[in-house]
Image (cartoon, rainbow, N blue to C red; front, side, top):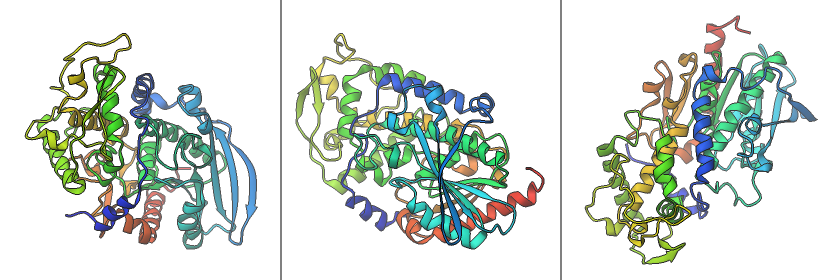
Amino acid sequence: MGVSRLDVFYRRLLLTKLFIGGWGKPEDLKRIFEFRKIIGDREKCKSLVPQDYPVYINKTEELADCHVQEGFFISPLEHLVPGILPQEAVKARFQFIVPKRWQKNRPVCIHLAGTGDHFFWRRRTLMARPMIKEAGMASLLLENPYYGYRKPRDQLRSSLKNVSDLFVMGGALILESTVLLRWLEREGYWPLGMTGISMGGYMASLAVTNWPKPIPLIPCLSWSTASSVFTTGVLSKAVNWTQLEKQYAINSRYEEEIIKLLEYCGADSFKMGPKLVTNVDEHFHELSEDHKLSVSQCSRVDGGRDCGGATDGAEHLLSLGSSVGASFETLPTALGGYNAHGRRTDPAECCRPSLHKESISFMKAVMDECTHMANFSVPVDTSLIVVVQAKEDAYVPRTGVLSLQEIWPGCEVRYLRGGHISAYLFKQNIFRQAIYDAFDRFCVKYPNLH
């Protein structure tokens, strides 16, 4: 199956770059990976969030068919991994859209935000209000860290500054979803479920892996890992590879310390060298054809050299020739010396031909560590999961990664014709129907579980 031309065209309209600050501090990545080992195991997380964790409602508005409540609470991540969240993101904010008349039971679906979905109006307009009318179902819209009121002052629009920011967002949303699910239970709402579109689907999936009870999950336009999104999907062209390569080359701690903390070793992991090299080489060919990149000259940076200059950070492609990319089992060890700050001082090491491939490999590795569903607990009842995917999705490639059916046997996957953008713009009704079907399935299977 080919990829959607609309997806490719839409991506070219977006000029902002992702991860302009780089990978994030090695110290932060270490703390995140250690916390991932805890939050990836549902049994270890039972007592992380107290049953009576405080949630506050500070505003209520009455509309024609519903009440809109606004509330907040302090993200549990601030207590568990202090200082890892930017100060602006510590307070979690949400909107709760409740029908004036319930049709049956008091169902609530939590919606997590997709990329670029700041504040609440988009989810409220396209999903929550129609769900009130169609099914009498309430919606709770949680604002993602790094978005809306929770966006750091130095962040440009939706472009996360560091790779580590995505992992912090995921960890925070897992815990914050637990807070809200427990609050809704205390308030007597039932049944409860979770959904999200694109990145919101990934985050909803991660949150459900941590919930200790059967729960409907409807991830739309997302898949088993975010690694393919940033290494082989069209969004990879928005990644600031120049900065990532520079940091990876200059700071030895990424290669020597961070890699040792990575535990994911599935059939699609970075450790599967030949498959990874094949996929990366194919990706390089696509990038070079698409952008007609030329090789840039090396300039001195921080006592080493930075191979920089091309707009997509892939300026080494023409110089790679037929060289074989490295998996992490064969990544080069230090070829030169280091200064007192652990930075490489050998210019050749900082401008080695394989650097771009190594950076892509490292991106895949850290993304799989923190976003791959196989690195988290399996949801309690996978038959309550309805996945909605676009057949020609260029943003979320499914090639070369484990399928959700392999990771979550028993889940249902529904495929739409077209790509990521067309599905988001024109298929919201299908997303809503999948939500209703998953909730109905839950009510038939667990009529007394509340």
